Length: 244
Image (tube, rainbow, N blue to C red; front, side, top):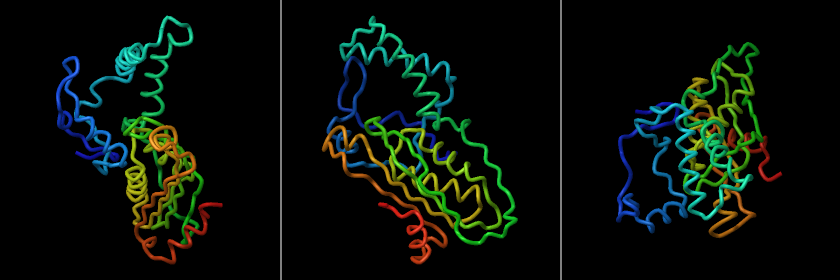
């Protein structure tokens, strides 16, 4: 079942190759390959069928306990005043902030309006702040999104485009999936195929670990409708002036 860019599944994980303290673990080599090669397994965000059985408060309480265990496993002394409240702060941040886009109930309420100005050219909103999280290493993805559409008779408030970008960003993501999800949602809301989305972002999983390349960024794009035409695509890219 698919809702708001989610796919719900009963699957309980992938192949395992043993247990640690009674918990099954996946093949370490396979997981490293997926993460380092930036592999996405689904266009939709994979979600369990029971994803929303627990309330936000219950999730925060559970994550707090688990994150305290992680910190203690790392050897940190949580009796220290600076560290003692960290598990709760992290749990609250996960549920209510950086992963709030996992809950369809947080989807922005979007109203459409008649295009009374009869504006027939592309509308472009560029340099939309984007803060997401890499689903392979849970490290930040930070960059800009650039969005355009040609009205088929309806328009939305400019800030709503930012809210759509923000909603789909606030979940563990792969940049390619995020780009497609934003474009798909705009097509659904605006009832038009004439949508363009470009994302230019830096990945902390590239800059702070692995190859540790701080200079590179990743660009992804999704074009549909008139934006499949080279002249309209070029016009859009000229407006957003990537690299300037």
